[in-house]
Image (tube, rainbow, N blue to C red):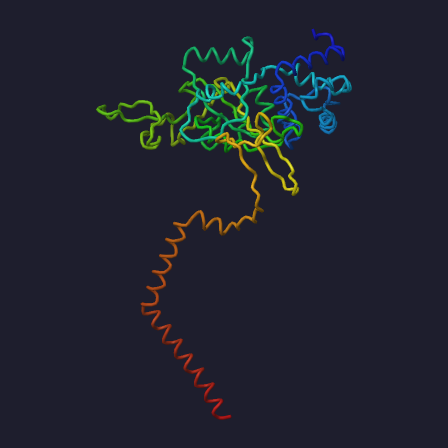
Amino acid sequence: MEPAPLSLEAKRLLVLKTIIHDPAATDLRLSLFISAAKSFRYDSCLQPFPPDFITNNEKSIDQLCRVLETIPPVADLPAGLAALDEQTVGLLHWILCRQARPALRTVPKAQHDEVLAKCPCYAKYAQPSHIFEVVYRETNSSERTFQDHATEFRTRHAFHGSRLFNFHSILHYGLQQHLNKVSLFGEGIYLSAELQVSQMFSPNGSGWSRSTLGTHLACIALCEYVDNPNYVKSQEETQQLPGTGEGTTAHATPSSDGPSAIMSTSFTGNGSFPERYILVKNNELVQVRYLLLYGTTKETNNNNNNTATSAGPHGSTVDPLYALPVRPPSYQMRHPPSRFIQWIANNKGFVLIGGYVGLLLIVGFINSRNAHFVKEMLLQKLNHVYNAVLGYRGKD
């Protein structure tokens, strides 16, 4: 039995409570929804789709985008809710209240290191501007199934990168291996124990133009997975302990010499598998626990040049790696070099070796019999031409 429909004022009140409870989480949920709605893949990414914008089993995406354009910034929403029409309020209620599970909770800055420590990384990585915890109900079916698997095997944490417009669906349905486009080492959910690796798969995407988190966002999921060897394929990092036998290994820990100096590799599963990668072949063994957000805002300066600035807590420009203020350059950027010049600059060793080999070939050819024959023939031709020209002039 469906619940009785709420009045317009009741929807406004519920939306207002949601915004006041966690404005940043509200902003993120709207940004993910709008990113999926504006994507060319909205038909598959915008799942679930608001039922009020489905007519005769056809999705009215243009009408939905027009309504989304009328939503003011989250900071102005509490005061502006009364001025919004019924359709806009109904859409906000559906996004923020009807689809509020799993819930999002803003993680304070002071706890960012604690969250990132759940999956220690060896390589340097950019610090996220915001972190949001994904909170499931105990009665959630996927969470119950995950906990059942976790009673038999230990759990670990790893990162998963994807494009921004995918995270609306990921948040509601979790990671699905059949939707994965990468299958180099088999079908499954690809994770990495290195945040830097996942960042390569999470480029900046267009979000919500009125978002305080940033108009362009990159999102990475910090996941918890059940390490069941029947479904999980990974390369474990091990090191040889002094005084132990050849088969004795221990988990590596970072040192001043770097991980490459202390780690040797042992594989689980068949075939070579990249270091610090994890492949999970069962959807039930993975749960998204946190969303790591990197926000940038596209602004226009006095010279009408587009610049990207990181959205800090006070709207200032911040370096995401070292959290230090960054001054915009005062000089004019030159045109980037051509691809050929860039290739030479990136492959200097190959260019030098190729030049040296080419020089040896030229010297060898000059000293060969064939080169001597060609030289003599060329000199004879030149001599004939010279005599013919001089003889012709002498007759004149």
